[in-house]
Image (cartoon, rainbow, N blue to C red; front, side):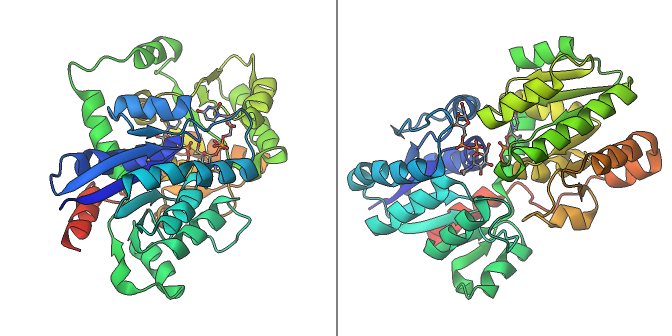
Length: 374
Ligand code: UD1
Ligand code: UDP
């Protein structure tokens, strides 16, 4: 009898990081694998499904404009019941720290399936940062039967919480599996992409490109206002720089960003880019300013320095390696660190050395082998 897998995700980053696992399981005859999307995100999720050619078996289509954590959590749990009843999975796979991961973890526990947590064990140990992700990840860790940790440090965090060692496997992060697949596809001779063509005409690549993203809930309001003020000053003082900011669709982000940064000559506000255009642009950028978890993990593979607009991170490995600096949301600090990277070549070169602590592109293979051997 084939083992039954149900892989569930809902947001853009989960989709990117689960895509290699979906593709690998679907090619493996020992498993009957089904994919369910909660669609906590809609447009930003669909961009990823298209690129990785994934057609979900179940699409709960749950996203509501400006949704809140209470109703999102409740609806996910409720809507997972019929899917779990029908599929009767042996294993349910959830990823990381979103509301989808946590709520699907709870639903899967009720169903009696074994819960496999991909990207397990990252911690800040402060439940307010990032909010609500740290709590989501800790809770999912409590519910999970198997923990796929990207690094030795994340395994150590789980052991410190008395997680059984035999249930933890250090795999590397599947984000690197996705990135390697993505870069190869994007650089293939016959690959055509209209977003990439538009970026080529929009930006002047003779100038230094600063790529910006930002969406964290704890930065909504004052944090985001302060980040935007810094970007405005950087753009005005450095005419040899172009800033491009693909703006997250969350209304708490789009509103202030458009208001504070719209109409500035060398700042380009664009819609979220599909994954191929985004990784193409990361490669062409001089520097990245972001609060994204996934981008902190990808950028070191591309040799790009990252200024992280957060005061704490559950991904300290690249900070220790020196390719990521936590700058918080203070305008002066962001301006200071950016100017240093723009003007001090030796400092820039040191920070952009190619080394990635997050994986070797074989995380997915390790996960599949582990489950197959059970
Ligand atoms: C969510 C995750 C966060 C993750 C981020 C990745 C939670 C609590 N938050 O935050 O951990 O880092 O995704 O981007 O799980 N929207 C759209 N279209 C989309 C996506 C979002 O219009 O494709 C808008 C909707 O109005 C939606 C709002 O953004 O209600 C917020 O989406 P939500 O998933 O609740 O929060 P994020 O800030 O995206
Ligand atoms: N990304 C993308 N288009 C964009 C911005 C980001 O495809 O316009 C990708 C990026 O390469 C990374 C992931 O989305 O893999 C990060 O998602 P996000 O920042 O939304 O979430 P987080 O990683 O912070 O949870």
